[in-house]
Length: 547
Image 1 (cartoon, rainbow, N blue to C red):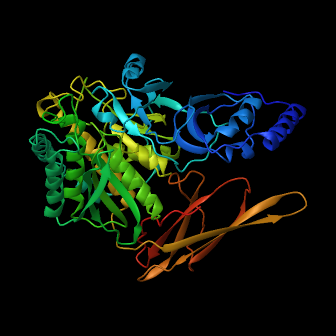
Image 2: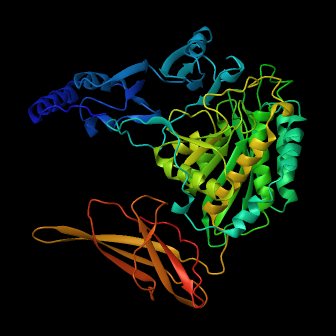
Image 3: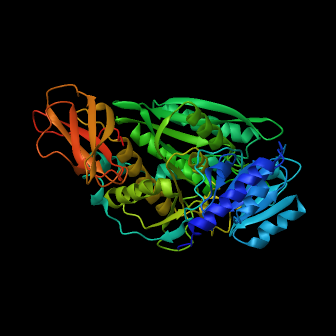
């Protein structure tokens, strides 16, 4: 879709009017909550976007906090926006999700509601314990900005669900070690873990049953020798305490680079405090994480793998938000997040896995599909949809990380969702096992099973533009730390699309730990990885990617 832009004269008049308003508009400390369409009729000046704070990205819109004094400027520019709330101070906002608009609009009986997009609304009331007042068929995300996002008002929002061809060969050669790992996935063990989680009767965050189930997951990870931690946090106005359960396989080459596979272990129903077995939602995803951890604990990888069971997801994604925000603050280098939420119910056969990504994470979805195709064939429906934010991948999107959601259906079709009847006997174990195998393959390939030849570390890239009378070209200089051992040389690979489609840049083996890539286009971003080759001709895994 294209939009017309004003002529230079017309835009100049708009900017002149804006300068007058800038000098005369009254200043106010009040903030308003706005919904901005991503596609706008004019280019939005940075003087206008500067004071704004992004709270949430959706497929076709941004939710933004802005000073109330900015409203006259926005109206003068004739921008497409809506004031959702005229004052934000002291309020707890939630995204609410339901397939029918009537379900969202019905929340007006409990507080304030605004319909944002199909299936997505905004809700607030005089309490932030929203989970305990809204109907069970509504799922939640607690908003608390700012998020790590650039306000790209002229970027068309993409909300599409398209099946893609499955092309495993575009990513990495077949690795028999990953095939060996996938072959160890046990349907019986997945069933056993789901049944054990269900046996707590409820895992509703704020109950002792939920904490007991967290201890069960903690002990499971420890049983397989994994470094395991309980990441405690508080949530809601009542300051309930719960914990994320985190197990770690430290990386052997670049331990600072992290791959996360996760699921939420808390549950919910319309009888939440006594009967929320949550077999599909989300003992199924949690059991998959546990099974992947059991198998991968016996191997070593270049990058660190973290297995995380998040708590308080049903209250509004509190556990994953707590972790993702802290990860960004400490500068954690998260390569990708694979989140599994409801992977056990099949409304039809054969069932397919809905794989949801945002634009930043599209490469990760493609990588998952390619890994599944090579090691664990599974029907997958990929979609780029930034509005699917009701699960634990979403807080990682908010912090600028690549993450995906694997789920049986969007919108949900499980008739037992958030009911006491969500029990293990309603699940399709073959489907849950297939998803577990595919997810294991993707995690293992992302983290890179350790190879006999260590890949280079400390990769750095710097670029320089060389100009002549008629043209200009870019030169990229790459340097790295020498790999240990009897190394014959190195190969340098580049791509125009991060993490995918690498092509070798060097014609002959590079003998020293540096390389100069010349005659490149100045208007293109290039991504590089480096491998080491030993005296026997064995090539290492890829290094960390640099741009």
